[in-house]
Amino acid sequence: MDLRTQLRGTGVALVTPFKADTSIDYEALNRVIDLVINDGVEYLVTLGTTGETPTLSKDEKIALVNFTYEKVDSRVPVVVGIGGNNTKELIEDLEKFPLHNAAAILSASPYYSKPSQQGLFEHYKALAAATAKPIILYNVPSRTGRNINASTVLRLANEVDNIAGIKEASGDMAQCMQILRDRPADFLVVSGDDALAFPQIACGMDGVISVAANSFAKKFSEMVRSALRSENRSAKMLNDELIEGYELLFAENNPAGVKAALAELGVIENYLRLPLTPLSKELHSRLKTYIAKR
Image 1 (spheres, rainbow, N blue to C red):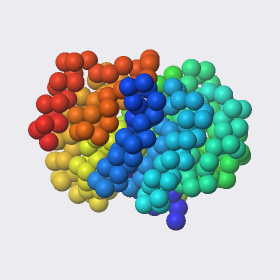
Image 2: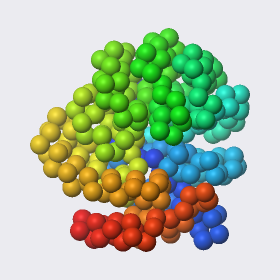
Image 3: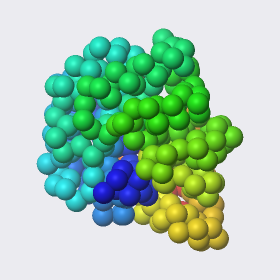
């Protein structure tokens, strides 16, 4: 089964629940995983930035991956996030991390360094050479400071065998449509922006890796499946109900919004690791009201 088939639909970028002392709350993560699978997501992403990975130690990351495999128990595919701006260190991670059960590696582009397009190409080419696993590019210039241009994405897709897809979060619809027009037939393209997922699927994307699906998995995954079936009227109705939720989840920072939502749903405690802090009281109150209306 190719990656476009295996990862078609909604993937959820899992939060990492914490206890009051900011240690990882595995019981709460257990509840999150069951919630999103039971509510219909097609696959999970562990160690995404929504999981506050910049604040996790390497040992914690490895433990999270192993816990996720064990808990999921092959019910859905699991994608593992391994990204950053130190190419050599990432190659070592690809060798050391438990990737035996991973469907693919999601790798955010190098942040802060702002490499050239050739630098981005060489970075991903080096990662691909270090693993037999498919690699999904993650383009999120609002966080990294550098866009992966469509020409670079397509060059990687055509020249590097196991560069198998992209999570596109540039917000540039023209760029997205160029990638969709010219991609190889087996190259996965998913949205990285919950608020744009519906129109991007209408343009030809294969689904989305979502933050909102942590807390609104049932309705969100139904919307995505409707959009993939080109049932745009039904998809729009569901998406319209979620628009306010998207706005509230991302108004201050991610994952503060979705952790507040999950806390209101009784799934996790509302703790983050610095430098992130919980939602302001005013925004949390608005989110609580929105959830109560669902």
